[in-house]
Image (cartoon, rainbow, N blue to C red):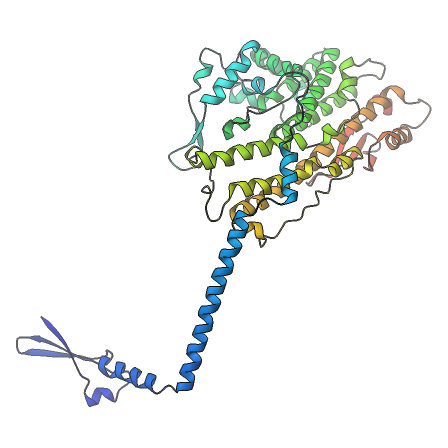
Length: 508
C-alpha cells in the first residue's frame, strides 16, 4: 500500500481551508481523500507573508527579543548572587545570641530524673534497676511505619524488658479510671465504690509506682533518643487521682488530703523542671485535676480540720519556674538540633520514619535552620519574658510572622517555612503555663481564707482584699453561682475564659 500527496488542484485552492489530495493505489483503483490541509500551498503562503514583513518591524522584534534575553539573564544572575550571599553569610547577631541562650542549660535541680520511672511505669521494674533498664530499652526500641502506608506505627521487640511483668490495665479498667474529662472524680467513684475497690486492688503495684513519682526532682528526656522516646506512657501517671478520691469516699480523709497535696506537689515540681513541652503540658493538667479534687474534698471538710503539712509546700507562692517555658523550649531545641544533625550525618535513620527535607540541598540549610529556630525560641528565656512572669503580665512574644521574602530564606526556604508553621503553636503553651501558676495562686488564697477568715465579716471582701494584696498581676477574680464558686480569668486562647473552684465551708 502506497500513500502519495499531490499538489492541490485549482478547484481545491479556491476552498478554505486548502486540501490535500491523497491517492491510495491498490492495483488500478484509487480514491480521493479530501478535507486535509494543502501542505505545499500552506507552507509557501507562510513564507511569502514572512518575507513581506517590513524591515523596521523585524528590527523591533529583534530588539524586544534581545532585551528579554538580557532581562532573563539579569534575573538569573541576581538570583544566583542572592542565593550565594544567603547560603554563605553567617548567622545574624540576634541569631548568635539566641543560639547561645538556648544552648545555655540551667543546672539540674536536686533529686533524680523521673524519666526512667515514667518510661517504665507499666512494668514492675525494681527502682534500683530503672536507670539501666530504661537506657537499654530506649536504645533498643524503635517505631516503624506499617507497610500499608496508613500512618500507623508498630513497636519493635523490647528485649531489655524481658523478665519484667507488664502491668498495664486492660481497656475496660483504663476506662474506669478518672480522666481529664471528669470534672468531679469524687462523684464518679462514689457511684460504684465496690467496682473501684476491685480496680484499685488489681492495679496496686502500678498505683504505688505512680505515687512514688513524688520522690523525683525533675524530668529530662534522653537527648539522643528517637522521636518516640519523647512520648512516654503518661496516661497511667494520672491514675493515682482515682485512688485518692476512693480513699476519701471510703472514709480515709487524712490519707486522701495528703494524697491530693502530694499529687499537686509532684506534678507542679516535675512540670516546672521539665525539658519537654508535652511533659510540661501534661504535668500542668494533672496539677489542675488534683487541685479540683482537693477543693471538692475541702468543701465537705470543716475549716477546723487540719491539713497535712505537704499542702503548705504544694501551694507555696508561685515562682518564675511555675510559669516559665524556658527549660522546656531549650529541651525542644536540643531535640531539634539532634534530629537536624542526624539528617546531615545519617539521613536514612530519620527519613524512613518521619517526613524531612533532604540534607544540604538548594532549598534547605541545616545550620541556618538552627539559627532560625533558636531565634524563634529565645523569647521564652528572655529577660523581658521573665519580668512579665514575675508580674503575671500576659507575655507578648513580640514576634509577628516574618515574611518569607527575606535574604536568609533565599537559600533556605524549607527551613523558613517549617519555622513559620511551628512558632505560633508555642505561644499558647506560654499562656497556659501562666494560667497554671495563677491557679496555684488562687488555691493558696482560698486555703488562707479557710483558716484566717473573720467570722463576722463577709467573705467576698476578705478574699478580694487578700487577692489584691498578694496577687502578682491584674487578673480579674470574681464570685459566681450566687457566691458558691470563685472564677479566675485565663490568658490562654480557647473556649474557656474562666477557671472556677468551689468555695470552702469557711466561705459560707
